[in-house]
Image (tube, rainbow, N blue to C red; front, side, top):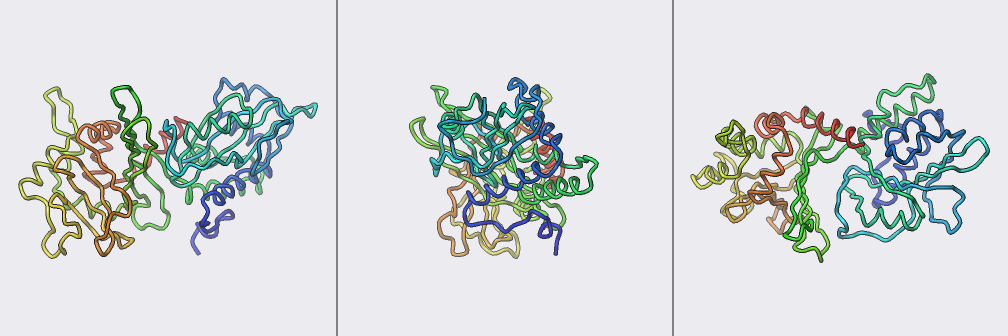
Length: 390
């Protein structure tokens, strides 16, 4: 058995995302309940905003609970909402948003006199689940909370990783939960860009995601390209995304485009001011010159579109493609064996959106991933970004 399946907190994924989220939060509550109070003190001090003043309130003990319903007569003096997820976004509303106001967890501080001075209400999302402003505002209202904050599971992992409290059993529990998060919940945003309409309404959020996968050989990371999109401020956002590319599949797909074209597209071409600016133009020129198409010995592309740039059969038996939609937008499509409709609406970035997203990353990171296929620097960037935002 591998280290993932022997982890104390390991469990197979449930059909219900809500059930899995509750269990991940339950494991966190269990660890905090079992170990020294100083761990909760330190965790809250690191994850919560300083202006909440929580770190200044000395707790004699903490009470922990899960699956918490709002109360008409709460027994705590003040409450705050903490959203835990892999993704934080300014989206106001998205598709498939439920209206349940039961929170996943609760940490309540009790002072020396037995008074419950404050309570942290935790709403968790796991995997690719997204916490929205609308959802967090609803929890704030129903729990009568004073404020809302969000952080990422990576920040929790960063706090627990290598934490030692001097008790063998406590250290084991902390180490096991850190390992559980690493194997199950370490995924998130490496880069993000946004687009607004003329009235400054948010209409598109573009992201590059990275995930740790312990079972992958060579590099234990995978990448996904995602966009939230709506035509107008009156509509809900719809999430479009590519397959999760293992490092091996990512290299196989992008390596069908020659190295110089990849460099000029993703790292950039000098703009006359000493800066390298990413652009889709080199990729478009390369395709127009006949650069695209199946390589020698490769089956014909499953997709019939003339602007399919590259395609592979991936680890899941699907056919991810790079396309130049209408010859001008970079598009990630994913087909099934019988070339039926896309499993999901494809992620696509026009020239301006592509450039903005790439410029969220330093040139050396763009080169590392899209030219050299080295994902370790991307992972290090993600961890640093999560801890800084936490």
